Image: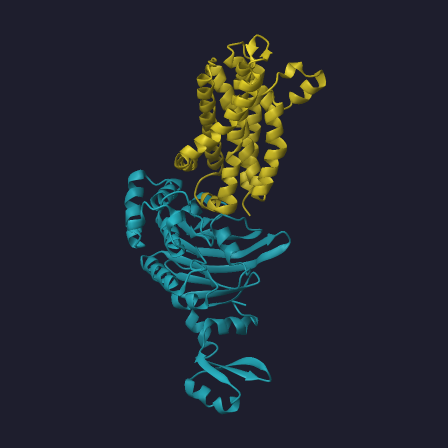
Length: 244
Length: 279
């Protein structure tokens, strides 16, 4: 565990050094979506018995926690391809599982930080939802899934541009289609079935239900936990294979 | 002590190492000399756990680099060819991080950092961001970082590549000082004078094979003491002599142009492989 802690502390030190830049960078996306979709059209639109702004905030939480957890992949790739710091980790007497754990914890922390920013922005906009234990459990599981995916994929890509490609093809479409901006149950049945294959759909559903104080669907939590575990094992396997 | 037996490595169909075997004694300063692409870095990567051998075995102080990977890693410090310090962190933060990765207690880390920065004469840059340091300073910080956990073996992969001659000599003094403290040093270089100045024994590596291995003095003595570069039939050739007098006796035969100098390790490499270390 001390190895995992060392990796985690290094990532946190970097995050602390870039605190204000990170704060600005994590705030700008949610703010733009809130202004464009929330304040722009949100006042006129209602989803069920809630305002669109209320509907949107849990979606932004799901989307941003995914993006920020997955962003750990870029940090790993910069460390691997540009700064060669990954060699320092590989040469250290720590197990690969410690490396994977440390990086995933860093991804989850980044994600929680970004969620806190959205909650503050939401409160400033007059939207107070229920940020209960189910809400945080869903956020952490969502972050666990995407941080694990990020660590695994970061080991498979051969360059930083490959990483950008993965983000463009998987993360960006998921951000828009995973129940963040619109209610999936209004889509045709076949579209709903396709979208139910996306982990973000389940995360959005769980986060939104918890934030609205509704009964949560434990199946979504179990699914995210199972997927996160599978991706964690794959990440460990791929870190093992990253040695030349 | 380092023991390597029939170490081989194949990358995508290319044989980078072809059955290398050697031993390096405790406290020895050993140089691994060869042109770029000869397999020097691959050997170091296998010994430090960064690469997996295709076949063969290696031990660091009795710990097998694959089977006892974690214990083997504790025996060694690595200064890789690429500068791989965390640019955004300070000198001390980089050293602290290394200490944490090697599970050093906090108190011990602090004391060791002060000692090492003093050792590499960079105490005043303790809290400077790494990005503000010169290339030579960064190399010294990398050496200090590799020494943080007091390794018994230090691997230096081209430690002076790209540095100017004055800084290079400063690094050499530091390397000598480290060896005098009892650390075994395994150095790769393609600078002939670096191996000559520093090493007690030298292995020449060419296309993944060791083609010569001995002390620099013995290797050079095998050719002679003096070398005369002459131009004959439009081509430059080098003739070797046991003494200066013997060489002077040949001067009259080469009125077209010659230069007389001491034999060096480059001559040995050329005589064994027919190639230059630095093409």
